[in-house]
Length: 369
Image 1 (cartoon, rainbow, N blue to C red):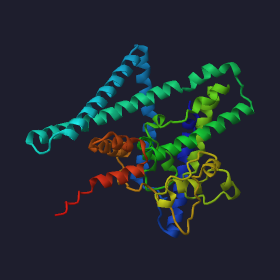
Image 2 (cartoon, rainbow, N blue to C red):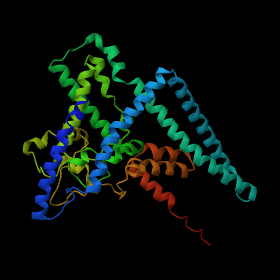
Image 3 (cartoon, rainbow, N blue to C red):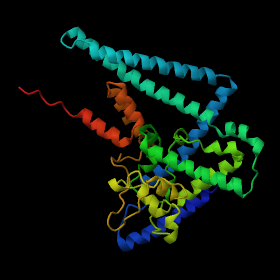
Image 4 (cartoon, rainbow, N blue to C red):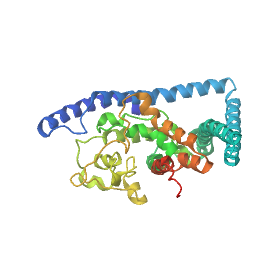
């Protein structure tokens, strides 16, 4: 069994203990954003269940397709759809751009072209993203790396263990950082940040498509002779470590704050305050943020953390939590009139996307008389 799942009883026991501690604190100091809210907690637990069952369902479907020899054909079809939709979008853009707006026929042609582009551009992005992520996952799988690295098997000593843990933590930092800096990846990760509360239940609010948010392959270290079992255990230990830092009941770890990712550092990561945005992406070691310029220390007195998103969704629906950013991203793609904006809405940062959307929605100023 997955080690991170095997410790589920510990998750629930610790949440119960934290809830009692927060209730006592609220009685003495008043309520806070750390308190458990029933609908919010249920949503977090529901997302945790979906994050486990959805990948399993996809895995079983993929396995069935492989067994029947259909995976290759399905991939070819999706690739063909991507190319055809991209071509149709480009042609529609040209028609819309060059249609004569001074005539009724030209205006109708432009309107129809825009309608076509709205649909085909979204199909291009969705199908193309599926092709890219599936191809990347296949080419960078741990088993593929291990097939080339097993001849130099390092065994189970301290060196391969250290290599597995350090590499996973390093790769996690970069994958997590890109999930905040690339909007398509943010759409995957954003459910984890959608709660306006911050307690141990928030740790379980995981995305259903997290496997698609990988840029740096975790299994690459297998090429050096690190066994896949060690890599998988490193994943579980990294995930388990990150569970306990989702709490407001531990204020500081003293000297440990300089090396480890801690509740204080991770509270900053979940903050929607402007100065806290996109900071402290570490898994276990905060040194990655210090090295690569994304570290920010919590200032609880001067600037208390405000949890949630810069634009909160105000919903505990699992469907809304899981899909709201995809919906907005595809809407922005559909409303764009050129590939530069479309790709920007997918590949650039969420901040750029929201600013660009606001810019495009501004009414045009009337021409001077």
